[in-house]
Image 1 (cartoon, protein in one colour):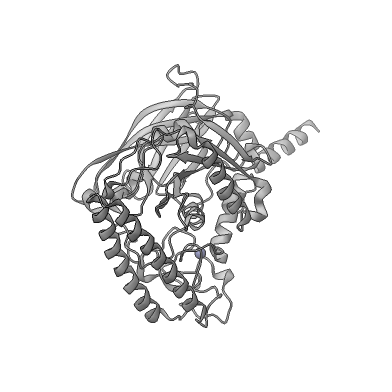
Image 2: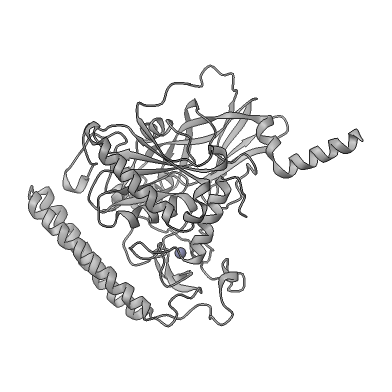
Length: 485
Ligand SMILES: [Zn+2]
């Protein structure tokens, strides 16, 4: 009888995986900071510092990452048995830098990065692996929980707002909105922005149906200056996390390189995923998978920006558009299937990853009015590029008022163009169908998206396509303790 009970207990715990967490980890977070450096050809990782932080927000079951997303992966092993105890895929700022022209020309850069793993009860082995590099493992570190070198300091001074906390961290996706470029007098502005964008997100599907499994907290560390850096306009601001436009040379790409400041501020709350909300009115944002996303809070497109960029950083969604200029080169190697759930090279239409969502009557690839669309959109993109340069020149030349007027005109043009393109797409006989539409992931040819339009394809508050919606729901489920796949 006793043997039978033991067997039953053993099988229950190995199925749920719950015992792995309790055996090996405590309810705290080990944050490992390191430097990731190199150029287009070489890359290295070097340890910086480790911290003990607050409660572990991530999943406690199925501790190995079930998703294939992210170029990098942190893995935790039991050094005695060699068994993997935890893993999580992610992308990094360095991972994007290495695909740019300066990196290909051999200019080396260093970025600070962090990984968060559950705090161990016993010594663990931690590796950082790069999926497409040889050797794959760039770092191997042993951590002993008794090590006096693991810092246990208070997080950076900040104000915390518990906006929507329906359940404890271990059964929720924990989202932290970090306020950037808000001065100490602007807490009211931060709070209003947080409420606006958090509620917007909780009203959007699939978040809306899963809102009982989603926690949203806000953290604001006051900045000395309001706003953020705008290098092409000659504006430099001292802010809490050093966010800047023109990341990797791209006009509207908004990122922060000050990882340590960002992590010290975020440490005030348990979090699975970070959103940097920037107190600025210019159009800008960015999203890197399992790192963070950014968006400007006071632009007419801000609601779209936060939902779209969070799709990248949280669910590993790719951009479905293909006509704007971007900073990367050789983003997608030919004849290979992209990892992202919402873009395909359609090398095998039978094995299409969203085949179950396609009607039998819909042809693959799916015909659409691409030639006409391209003509309309490319003309606009050329005009936009010209205007951006003129605005930057006026701003650098000290003609601030003139630049602001030109910016407002450009925004109006963008809004009109968006409406025209939406109306055009709605006339396509395949509107609303799931198929494989050529033009996606910055490639006009050879890559395909699931529907004509989607939150990941064109600007505006609109639904995710069914493929993106499913991918986001699976990811929320993962953090909420329901595996989702
Ligand atoms: Zn989509």
